[in-house]
Image (cartoon, rainbow over all chains, first blue to last red; front, side, top):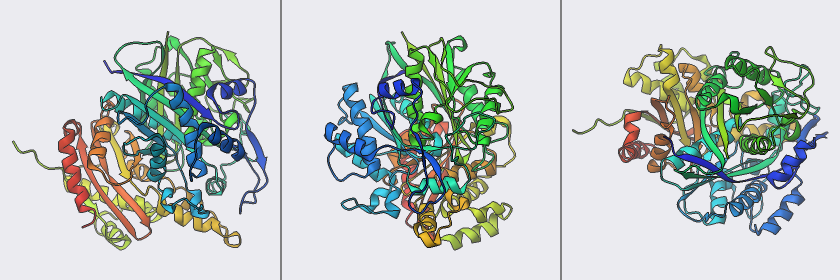
Length: 380
Length: 196
């Protein structure tokens, strides 16, 4: 019997709020952080983005005692993790606490715009992670999960494994990405970005929106059953098909779903929180994987219409919001969806629905042919 | 009984070496020429390792689902990041290219290797401060908590600039990883080869 992994604290910092609760309430009320931008830096093509107000982050830093020469990315990680660690009531300076950072591009904006007082070396992801750990006085060695869009789910899976190994008592899993001209221009060059709010799974979907978020879960390992959220299992699988295009058969996502379904009580499965980027290929691929896994009738929900694609934070923030939704017996509305636009009619809805069950699956896929899923269960 | 050491391949002699090795020993995968330095290094080292250990590519469904790829590095995609940044830095010379952008993710190298070999197991890329044998051995051992994973193509791959890379790859079985200290010792030997 695998040791039990519980989520004991969580936080989300985004344009929709600076706590998990305020984020959940905003989403439930239908608010979105997406806004249209006509240009940014050298980018002259319009795009839609969910961007965090820098003043809010600076204010939060002051409030939380985060002082020092930090980049925006590092402040973002700290704003979320300081709150979660405080709520967890753990001593993060212990060598029994593992820090895992999830990001795709970290401090990459330093390449285009060096920052006074910040060594250029911090463009290296582990150096940025080191700054965060130094703030908490944690003596461990930094580790950053950098698996494109699935990083946030992978980071939770790796934390689960490290805790089960017995080497650590707690894991602080933090995900964030800053949306700089680097990432935005790249996705624009792929013609993957919509100039309208994204429409996941809709027949008229035109592409994704990018977004900014920082999110944290604090996990603990124990051998006794306690009330709360349990991270039951997870899986990472590759399509082995294409580095930038999803598999036509949804192979990797299908394999991930089949793996987590082994531990799932199907009548307790409240919903699947999908990736749902609103690109033509991703949503079609997910519909195929869900169909093949026998999940076509299970409620499906996607959060990109509220947050955009938050990259390194996505797997963590979307897991946290799913926990709040399950406890609220709610399938959150998939904002932007109106008419079926995939080959297989997944059970996605533009309205809030009621649901029952104590479990959910979080599914992600990304560049490099990567796919990941995990299963959370609420124990009364 | 003394346990046999793990086979590995280590390379660090620049792009000319990679192209030469590709032409001499591989030759049937033109995608190689599109790859960035990080992916070329990981791809060529893996090809040479598989030849060295005599593993055939055509394999059962069961096998391709049981082979994971777990790579570590400290630079991640820094080399590709710098190349891409050049294309967007200058307003009068602005030409962002999807072909360059896609390589600004370090896990792309794991994808390139998975595609070549049809491996559908786990693929992961972890960024560390430096090559640390015990840290790597710990996370490799953790990867075997996935019950489907029976072996891992593991290694270290770094690239700061176009003609500058360091890579080693090895194959780790479930049994190898069970003795984490032994595995760390093996990885240390490979790390010692990085700068030779």
